[in-house]
Image 1: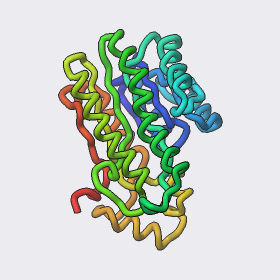
Image 2: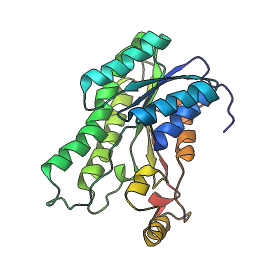
Image 3: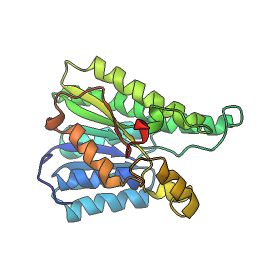
Image 4: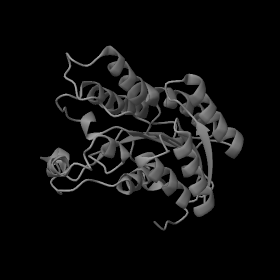
Length: 257
């Protein structure tokens, strides 16, 4: 993608940026001129993203190994933004785990806690460290990754659905709390997106399962990571200056059925 330098000189942190939506969005911010702190537990993927930003875009990338269940790691991520680039303008809190296919009464406590800890508490830990830095530097924009399953339920996804509903609620609360302090907080709610996560679940490799999943979307296809990146950059930009507390679905019509 070719971009104008809408984020030239700005500093972005992006979690889960070693693959999928996080990687596409981090690179898109780089193409828009941003300095990007690439945060991921996946060292190889994270370094690849940071190198791509530095070598192939108008921006600069720095990789930090971050486990969003570890408060010290999250603090290190934010401190890197300030020490390397002088502040923090945008945060994309995207790190997540896929759900397990179990009913409410079947899911193990271990699986429940792991999914909630990454997908919901990880977003909270990140915002808890990001917001004070943004306040010290005059404001900023936060975009969280929720899901269509943050707005509706789906059988046999109890922890994932609960976590993403939590992200939607947390986004709205933070938006209300900081609405007069020049910090906007929004979320994207992707439909089924063609990423490694879906590959690992067999959705994109099993023809029958892929067809069933595509049929859930009125547009009859899966989304792409770049399509989500476009929405994230808009929500983080000055073009969305009157948008806060929004949970924007990019879902090929899934929620309109």
